[in-house]
Image (cartoon, rainbow, N blue to C red; front, side, top):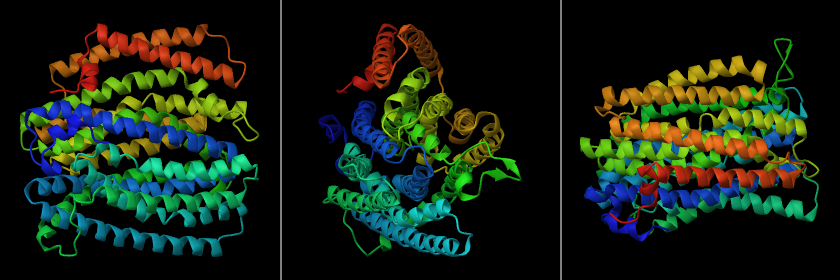
Length: 545
């Protein structure tokens, strides 16, 4: 829930300038989002463990995970991505100046989003049905297409939920806004646990039931967020006063949807690359394909591990800083200070996460996915560990990119991030096609991290020329150098623990070594930050002004 400090700093309605209390409220917002997101990420890991136990590294699991990913691609595009980026600055401004107009803008946005996403869903269902009826018979491919059809209605529901969450953030309800994944994970965990505990065979029927539970969770999230917004938004069908704001929002939306659409197309291509053995066949141009039917399972389930620290802390910083950047967009000095603080907080968390995850990768995948009748085999664990190493190297860049992109959005510049994303998608795709042959699934993770690092550098340099703000001033650079030194020292400590600890003899051995290494690493980094007087640690812990 929203903390007392957040309420004290927030003006009525959450809009307008905050005055000198902006910096502490950023830390409070990060803590609120991180706390709830931590629970949701734990739930996400539990969900993936259940899926691994139910289906294993199989074509069925790959098909389910691909079907689950497709509506979420649209969520990132239409919901929390492009539309939220265009909507939030206008809604923030309207909330501070004219709450009635803010209600009209919110009503118009939700209505238009519902119409567009529902139309896309119907069209996609028709196309999938045609493919099912016309393509040569193939059980694995048919199952995959049917699962996509079952889960596609999740898309319009979760897109609306993302806009409702953005509205909650503007009203200072950062913690409640992050509870949506808790609902989703709860539905899937409860359903999957029922089949595990009753010992029923997990076949295609179970996958369809889990798909239906996913859709039901989307409807539940929508009702929950609408209830949380009661008294804060006046829903209406009279949209006249908000039309000018809606037009400005659409002008911003266009470039963002192109940029993010390209990113989501790239994500879809990644899925296609991983799903090629199921959707197309075991060869390409007569040459044996380097991936197999379980590749999408290995890739997708391993992604959750790097997304854990990114979601709990990295995206939490960006989520909390976005409304604050929007509020200070007209004040160059406060805008720059908020951006730099967001970047430093993100890097303070992202660097040790990258280093630590790379060092404990083997134990992490073994603890989560080994064991049971359908758990990962030794070969599967080696593949997952290689994939995680590639993703781990880019955690710091993923977090910084979220903050940098929101800085451009807050100033109304949606074109620059679009162009940078187009460049990086091209780099990512080229690396994907080149690296899967020598590295298999790990090639996809390395390509993603390299492209993210390029994006981070380019966006950082463009802040000065496009926004008139230097993302890195002298204190920020020195702070980054000190963080790198602390992360390297932590790496030496954790590396010694991993090397000196006995070789794990089973699940318990991996679990013990993982807990010790993670605890020692976190303690060492915190101690080094305190000894080195890194202010970021105090920023995160500070409560008063």
